[in-house]
Length: 212
Image (cartoon, rainbow, N blue to C red; front, side):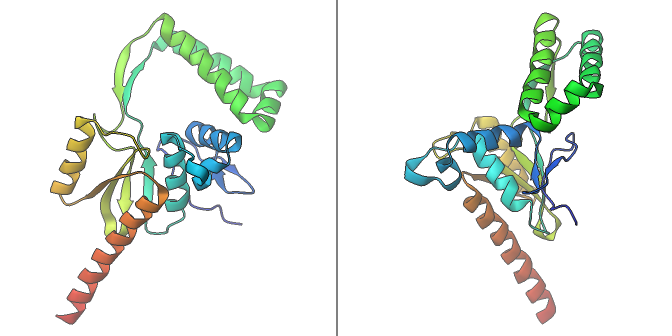
């Protein structure tokens, strides 16, 4: 049985929920936990306000099944790092992964395992931090990749009331200026409209080319 194509960050090893074919990376697990606590989030019922994480999860889930779309998660920001201390933490994490108890927790309670690993790393970084930037570029969109026709695609994800920063707006304008497709989207429906518009442009070009 083939595994459904779902979008992942380049640094995330795809791990799937067998029944749903769903990603269990940190972002997706946390989004599904939010939905489980409040199922109305997924359908937007009764005025339920989705968090940005849930909106992005829904977009990744829907667009990830499209054969002509490839999206990568693009977290952007500043991170703290200390090489020596981090190697020690990674050794502890490795020991957790190879122990029977660690394997049991990972299999049965992946979110608890992720939170434990995150807490170990956070504690280490707070003690001896070095700051460095991560992500494609300052202001770059939450989801980036390739859309229909091989066109560069960037989707800045916001909630219904979320606001974009100046850097985010500049990145969207830059992509558009150089021939890519960049949009600000607030739901999976809006993201799907972007993809349909890209397909329409591609179809028009192909049709025009055939008529000449």
